[in-house]
Image 1 (cartoon, rainbow, N blue to C red):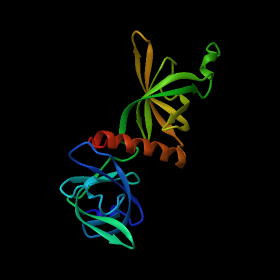
Image 2 (cartoon, rainbow, N blue to C red):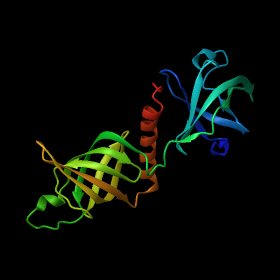
Image 3 (cartoon, one colour):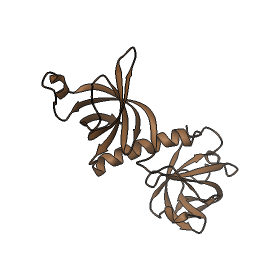
Length: 217
């Protein structure tokens, strides 16, 4: 078991593996062999919310992994109710943050870093675009703005209500679509700050839960 990826004091998300259910966030109290003790989000008589007969996913936003687990017992510890889970597999990665990508539809504002053609002053203005694919390391962008490979761009968009201002480089150009005449570009983010990286990771984690953990309500 790769239980060393679970740290005491960190948080895990719990969701039922077989049916629609809400995701609950719990603090890890103790890790031992293939068992994990979590502080319960419920009172001790509220077991029906997490029935012991069900199987669960325990997943981590920080490390992007999940385990399949079962409830072994409910106990009181230090005056608080806890749930002990036994891990049923060795865990699986929810993909590296820079590799995992999700389809999306996120409005964005973009411009080139510099105006290479003085006859096209609009290149220096913010233009509308849509991020249709996002990862920790880059994005696929749909826009009417004409750009070329290796152009450097400025991108502004919002994730979960949080603003991101990123720099990027055009790595691929996919032509234009009709009838909208929009171009698709593959963009690699450059010099992403730790704060912006964390905003993207949080978005990817929840998107991954919605897709890879389809039973989360």
